[in-house]
Picture 1 (cartoon, one colour):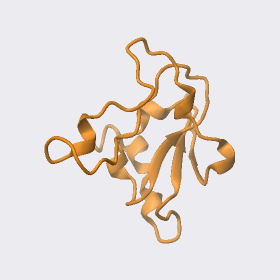
Picture 2 (cartoon, helix red, strand yellow):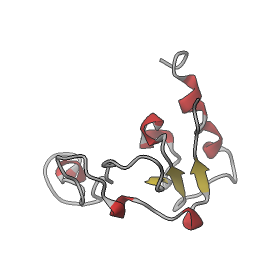
Picture 3 (tube, helix red, strand yellow):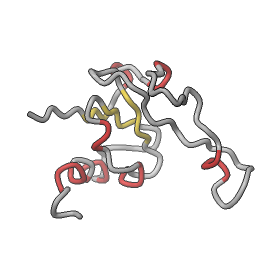
Picture 4 (cartoon, helix red, strand yellow):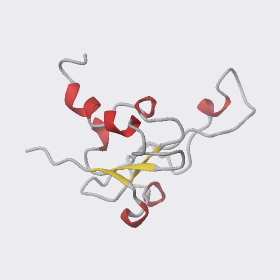
Length: 109
């Protein structure tokens, strides 16, 4: 898997270097958001967020940070706000570029 899909994964490697990111930072993704492999590839305390781009469908939501619920991962069973079954865009999923410290914006030809 690493050989065939190395480019999208390697983009996030420098985030783990000292002084590059810190807890509370956001990695902001644009139109290539679907190439983002997983929040597991981000340093602890760093979140993935989305900025407005050419994509105008429904984006993934954040897992709830609930401390109570079912099973070992209580927040995983809650549906994130703004979700719908029609792929309609939810503007509340976006953050401003002005608040972005770690932009990841790719343009593939």
